[in-house]
Image (cartoon, rainbow, N blue to C red):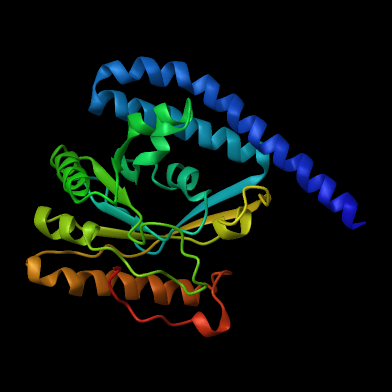
Length: 265
């Protein structure tokens, strides 16, 4: 019986990735044309067709997504979305979650090197090379410029996958510095099921099922200064951590139900 389950898992995985490639090659010509329309108009268009891509792909592979709002999402004005990062599936879930406003995500620069997908990705995100202080500063300037244009931004404050089996890894300062320096509120989101659908340690364990994104209350930065970065970071961390524990996120081990907030090296 186990061999049959493994065969079905293999066939399903092949089906999932073939569909992904099919949609990618359909989207690529449109993204290529849109890249000549400028960063704003072209980027907005690429995000629009990428949302359609995510919708169709999720439907055909049997992943059913739902957005849950613990507090209403403002109809206007940019914000900084931050979310936990636990799976390769987090990227398309961003597109399933943030629907009614334009945004730009901060993403790894090296992903641009992937053929075809890297072009689409690079046309829509603000790339960052965390190993370069100069490049990090340039990315921050680009993100601030995006906010000034009234477009929201999306950042994974953990920086990379959380492999600790605790609710969250420690946060980097970037999102919180930008929030304070631009006066932009932070809207935390929890991705609760991406770990169960596709684990970070293998691309060949993808499974159909539910996907939920929980929008927590907005965190305001009014009156804060550069001295309050750690305070803001801790507030958002604690809010997300306690909510993940309350929601019984599946990756949290028994001894990982609480982690002390700190700063990455």
